[in-house]
Length: 214
Image (cartoon, rainbow, N blue to C red):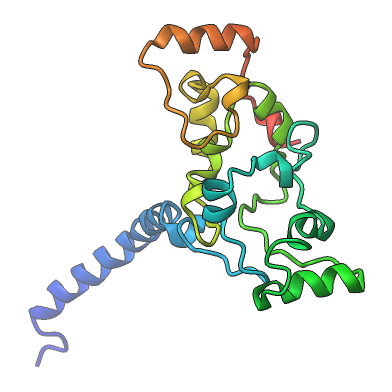
């Protein structure tokens, strides 16, 4: 009597094929997963300790990004506004709203509001806001239509490939300095306008590893 039936040969081949294919499938799954919002953290609104609606502050009230993020032109970080800046307006406007209880307690008790970071890069990546902004890259390029977000969320993947693509072909992202924070700015159809901006900003984008990994 035979120990294995003829069907065992087929099952053995299938098991061997699955064993060989498993590493390939695992690598493909990892590559595909790394491009999904679940990995890049895109399109997931972050709940903050205070309900801060960018639609109201930016679109309705016309507050410039640099009023709150006042170090974006001079530092690697854009900065977070201190509570005193919030109270500069809200000591007069909506000064009794329960939605601003956290802001008032922060101001009168002298402790900072613990805002949650939305755009987070790995620790081994160096990014400087000031060099990008001063070279004509607007807020929209990385942060999206913040003026349409009730709760701030990450719009771009912020992956290495996404950054390198912009460094290799930056001209389409350039804008006049007066329009840096204008989220509704419409770029011109004339490509020569971008070439003129690249010349004006003396643009020489780097793609070497040490640009971001120092």
